[in-house]
Image 1 (cartoon, helix red, strand yellow):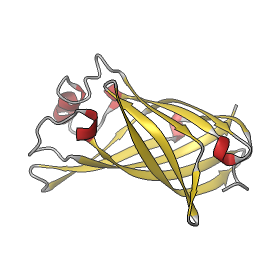
Image 2 (cartoon, one colour):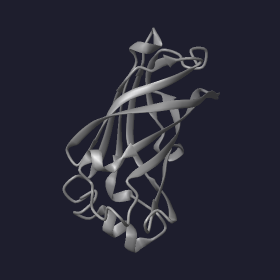
Image 3 (cartoon, one colour):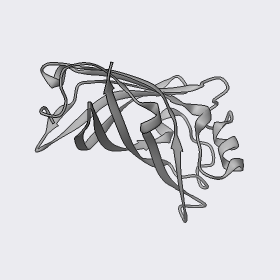
Image 4 (cartoon, one colour):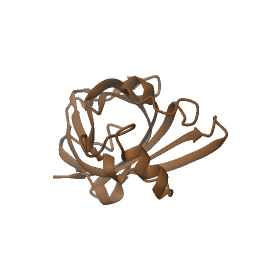
Length: 168
């Protein structure tokens, strides 16, 4: 990873960055997949790499599962409350070596509740003057106080991030 990621100021390209999630609903029987758009992402790649920092903002109102009815409910007061909490924020320090790979430990804030989240970095590769990072994690929505529809909506979300990082 250190050969691909050079020190300096960078940002996420929101048009080429995707945050995808998957969960289950209807008592765990039916899959639900969706996306949430990235509004912005500022990254300082440090030297050494472990001294890096980042902050990413996601658009809570952009929650999208291909079911308009579901999306309106999830953006509403019982779940994300996007009217009063329009963004989700992820702040992280530099990556941590984990065996032969890397993980990124950070803090995710949803509805003014902040919890620790670790992303396992699954790929880093050059992309011209930029680089691409793929990562994944599992999030417990109950940890953020989002516990509506306990039997109908899945508690855990599997989140996959595909980020294109460009130099400022």
